[in-house]
Image (tube, rainbow, N blue to C red; front, side, top):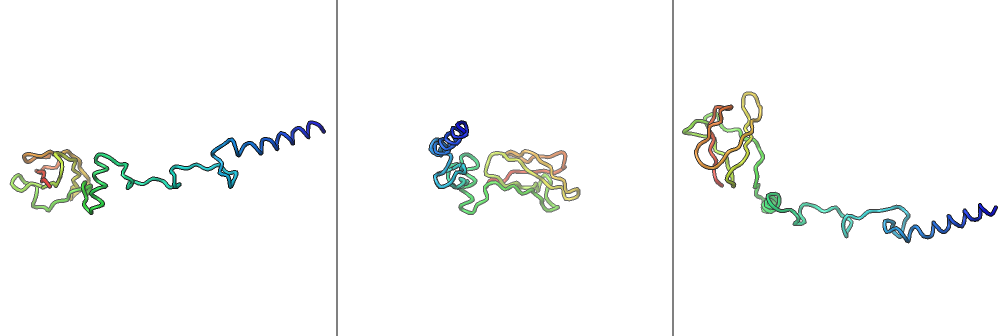
Length: 132
């Protein structure tokens, strides 16, 4: 009987002290809760925390401008010769280009830099970067 009474008293003591010792428990419930921010919301990309290319891309998206076009290029059939190269728009000095082959629908990826016309041997076409 004495051991049972001690066990009950120990359980009551633990029950009273646990909510005060752990800050994970909210006062209204005994279920632990975690907070990621002050207002209990998950932060978004619009909070101004992004820097570099991603930050610049988000700033231009707010203005309605697509800074980095990720769509593959499918030019008209008459483009791709040395005198009429496929023009690739870019605001940087170089960029990675994805070209969709109209016959096989495969995407070929290659790097293109500012300057003269570039010949891509795998495609048999000429490309030139167009500055924005």
